[in-house]
Length: 246
Image 1 (tube, one colour):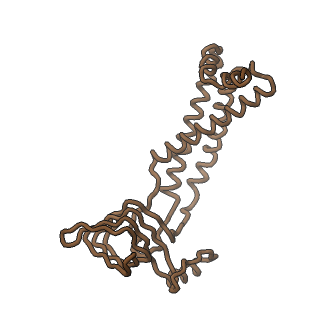
Image 2: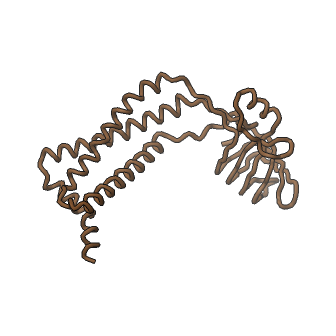
Image 3: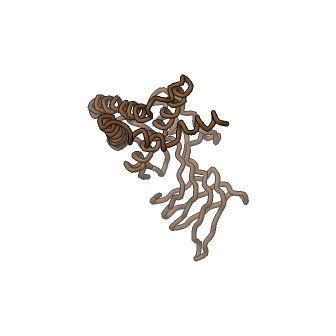
């Protein structure tokens, strides 16, 4: 029991705060510099990721009716939050593993502030790597991508008409506005099997597009028909047309 308490006390935040407060001013400055390196690396990588997504990816849907649908790219704030979370977890994991190693080699006397400073300062490598990669990335041409299958949630369709399979058989839905909780769009061959996209050339892709068609699987569908609100749990292998999808 006593040994377990020793291990726990070895990791408690209070020891880290106490170690930092008792450190020399030089070490405190290095610790602050380490925090700055982490912040700069996160911001730099976020800007680089956002730039790559917005300027270097040229994606388009190979799904009929989706040509004008806005691609769901992550926003700058979403990328930033994700990087903060992953970086924080990485620092925590490295810190715990390092402390465990020090504990088992009987180096409990090693100051936590020194270890934290070393871990944080190592992020200067990430800053340098980002500075090296950024000009190379900027000079690269756009990378074309095609989207042959997509899943969307909370979709609103305007001036839509769909025909597909429901529990009661073949159903047609037509309404100025339809709200769809979940929508999956993909392409199928004439035998209704999904297209095998393991191809090697653009010509093969174009051939598959010509030979296949787009179908939709939808759930939680709501619409108004003759002033009455209606809903349908599921509509499978549906085809249709619409003016706008958001």
